[in-house]
Length: 97
Image 1: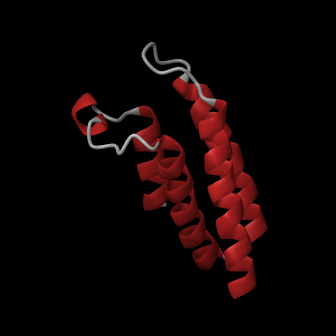
Image 2: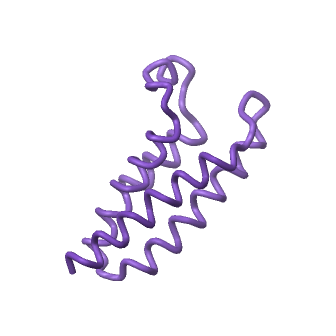
C-alpha cells in the first residue's frame, strides 16, 4: 500500500522542488515504478492478474486526473509505460508463484 501511495503522491502532488530530482526519462520512471509496485503487491496478495488489472486502471486514472492540473497535461505514453511495467511484473510474478 505504501508503494501505491508513493505512486499516487508522485503523480498528483509532487512539489516543484522534488520534480527537479526526476531523471527526465519519464517512460522508464513510470515503467519501473509500476513494475516495483506490482511486484510487491503480487507477492503479498498472490493474485497477479487481478493486481495487474487494477494497476493498469490506476495508471489510466492517474493520467486522467493529471489533466485537471493546469501545468500538467495527460500523457497516453506515460499511462502505457505504467501499464507495461505492471504487465511485465505480473508475468514475472506469475512464473515465480
